[in-house]
Image (cartoon, rainbow, N blue to C red; front, side, top):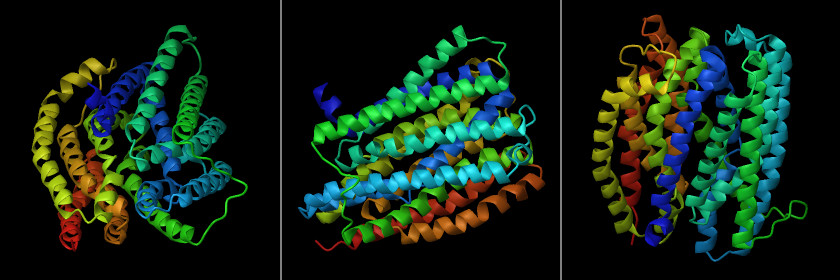
Length: 436
């Protein structure tokens, strides 16, 4: 048992399983509490939250790549400087993000653009600002997750997510039981926003304090000296930002496209099936995330055999993943029927397309982790930029052909199919070029 608890890959997967189960139960309660239309709007808000967390110019991601390099080169003194700079830049970025969304609420009619009929324009803007305030604070407090991974203690990053998701589930239970069910849709969304934001902020601050206490690292936001090496880190961070926002744009913009092409109610069926298949994806991605810094370590040590062996093990394990996804495909209608209280009509092939997309995302993300760990991102960025340009035109092309909400999945499938051919090929090419 001690070996299991000390294994960051296994425990990361277990913690992600806990957070995934909490997420599923939370979705059921939120749909019951808010109704389909307002839950669809909450999904749109939450997607904004994901976008905000990625708009850090890739600085947090570069922590996981550069800190192992500093340790390998025995430049320990650079670690605290790098972390201090990361926090300072992140605070500045969070303020810029808040001002950006403040301008959006003053200049863009979000109610009209996303066909939100149940709320007034002022209510939509107010909800967005409330959530953005919480999200910007969480944006800074969220840095601890990358720090845990960078210091090869990735299980604690996933543990914090599990604690956050579980506390949010408990809070929703209390809200459903004790709150006034006759509250307006706006009031309910305000309550959910405050619960989600405050719990997330509290947990992230708690785990941040824990990290600095364990590692005995001292940082200074006022006296930080940005040495020349930070320029290289910032360039690497920009690449990560392009990747993060691009990946989110391709796979998380679907809710906005559906809302714009149809209405927020249509988002629910897509979101329910997507969240169900997100469960195995989250578990596996969480388990694999500690490999980010391990890949960097093995590459710096020129451990070609270890890297090729890791690739081989994953390819063999992927067969088991495919079998699990096939099983999930057949039981999804039954799971949805007992999971969601209000009957939901699943469009034909929605489950099938989601299963294929999930499998391909899992496969290609393993090799994306490898490229990210090494900081060799130019090839992937080129592919990603082309994919971004294709995503929306492809989606609306299939909408016009009458594929309904499946259109967003078909466009993503076409894009990621080419990823699965090109990105693993590039990864193997890099490893085989290592001179021992």
